Length: 314
Image 1 (cartoon, rainbow, N blue to C red):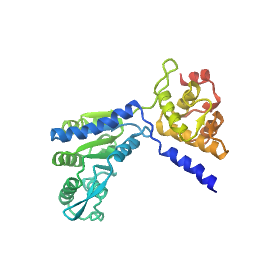
Image 2: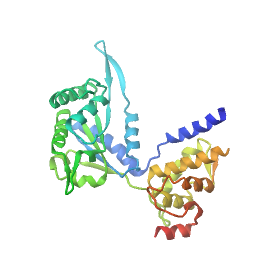
Image 3: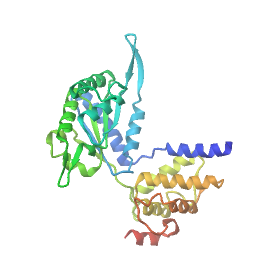
Image 4: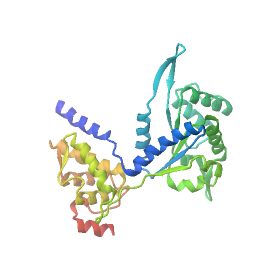
């Protein structure tokens, strides 16, 4: 039983690995720079974090949350909660009231859960709590829920959009809108909204290029170095040309699918009493169908050679 527990403890630790890329780090530092600009300029400077699902948006938000953790301190004989970063998923449908209640709950205010209180009261309460909690950054994830979809058009909910503008102005806090790239042109139709979020960061799928590498191999090299510390190794090497191209074909370079494939491969090897991961383990993981949504590849990439992979990619 202890051996079983140790095995799954190793798998659990793999889940906590955060592998960065150049784009990831640009967004990671850029969003924090917007916070510092807002403080220095005494004027809110916002940003947008854009990516399709599975490319690391949530991971990046969590990384910043961990860097700016919540804390408590005693002030005038009262316990004060410090919440530097507030992370909220925009509800669907997004109304001013539903969004305000979500944000208040994130700040620890449970008095609003029953939905009582006018919009004006909830807004005033929210502004007060954001100041009390010394909040410096607010993530609004799934910001596409701010848009109303109709058979003939998609546009931002004007009431909610105006409320966000007011909230940004009255708090002076840096907001980061997190969501899908295709909604940005619709958001930028409103120039007052657009100018509040001038810094745009985008995460893209990893790439391979047989002639000059591409971002996939650097990513896999970092994964390999991290896993080596857990005494997990790969033969052939995880960042070899063959394995990198096989993973690219299986996942189309989407980070979450890459990590799922690696995790399942490791699980298969550990279940067999091994800490050396082989192509057979990747082949088994692919057959589980965990990458089917993103890649419609019908032939097992981990049973293909480089020339076959190149032909499939063209």
